Length: 332
Ligand code: AQP
Figure 1 (cartoon, helix red, strand yellow):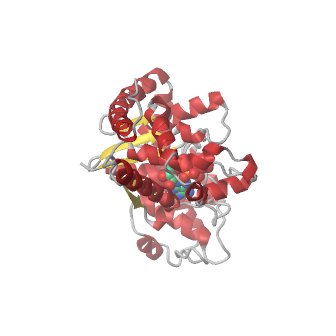
Figure 2: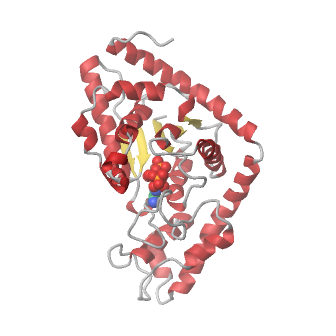
């Protein structure tokens, strides 16, 4: 089976509907056809300040949300990045073949560092894409399912793999991005032109997977739409309605066009109620399962460590090859 690798940062204590539609829902459906590795990328999370206790809790809670959303640790490898030291080790080696200008062209770094002024950004934030390349390349990953915002980072991983192979000999599989459909990108319910993001300033535009059902329903009822009455997909003219259509389409598993036909001549009230019901129906059981699993943190850690051991075996073998190729001493 082809190998896929993807990950999410434990940068908040709940995932949101964008992470679910853009990542988890897709991953869940790929588990049978691929040898899937799903990582909880805590080393990426510390490129911006994190509270230590909150980080460790968010890491475990994220693992629990993976499982509650259908990632099966018996079929897929799901582990915490910091448990496998080869990620940081390979990232360092790849730093040595990455150009300063090349890293400086990454738009995510430019956006994130601009938020607080470039001087406040860490060096870690700058080399974030190199760590991501290490994550991918350690496992001979063929496909990386990501949103289009991550395409540039996967391109960098490809470039680094090719550069390493031509300088030091065939070592890495050159990965390909698998970019999700445009409708897999979910926007903030209050600012429907901005990507829904864990680190957004306000809560009212974000539907958290662990929100209580009544809270989810309220947020969706209050979503910004427009003064029209037509339920039609048009990101330019009707960003709010288009976002809700994308959400309903993902949860019901039906095309947007079918929904447009279904809601023709009906107002936004009916439509929003149905979106809220669909999300609550899906997230309700995920929330309950998360709460159940959270009651046994030792069991969660046991599952993670078992999986990390498999990842560690694969990653150490690749890292040994890299040390040999580059002329470094073997790791102990
Ligand atoms: N709004 C979104 N719509 C669709 N997919 C999304 N993803 C994130 N936001 C949306 C997908 O979720 C996965 C995890 O992303 P991440 O945690 O590595 O960081 P991110 O992409 O930067 O996500 P956030 O929520 O915006 O987190 P913060 O605020 O911490 O940076 C990825 O597959 C991403 O495509």
